[in-house]
Length: 187
Image (cartoon, rainbow, N blue to C red; front, side, top):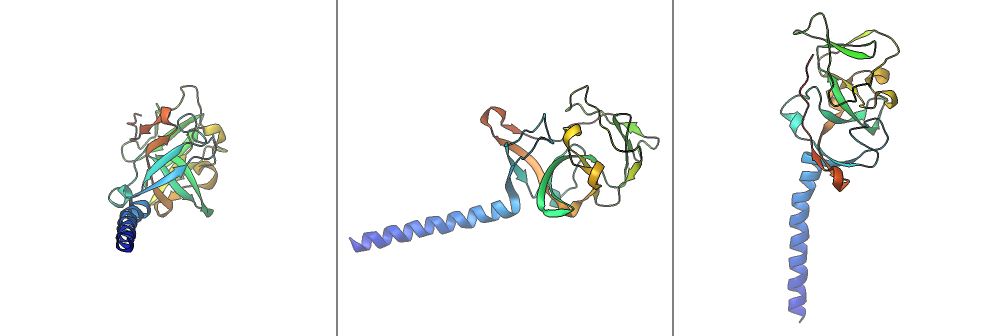
């Protein structure tokens, strides 16, 4: 009887140790849960939605325009934000007359960014029409709810070192489960 008890405990300990050996590296190096707080990404992400964040992809390639990223707030790295990548390193970004303009090698005179994931009547405004120049490793990020979002318009570009990962899938609520990919842009 005692022998069976110790055999049971030994098997239980093995299962727990093996499970932790698998789960801990996945949780800390590959994927991470993220809970959306606030309305800054509506209508695409709502308060209290549960996301899974891909933490490994950006070790092999750079964030792309349209990626939904989770990052540490540059002014308080204890806080995490979720926003959409709009501007890439080396580009210049201008928010003017309700639209976003991208200046890069391809569009040296600027091109208006078409954002099909937003409502057609939504406009983007900033305090001024200044052009923001992004340095190497810097990204311009905006919330999808442009009228209720603290983003690069207020705190500036986000350095890649602050980016934790990109939204991989929405796991909750069940009626909104989705896998994400960066939208294709047109100018």
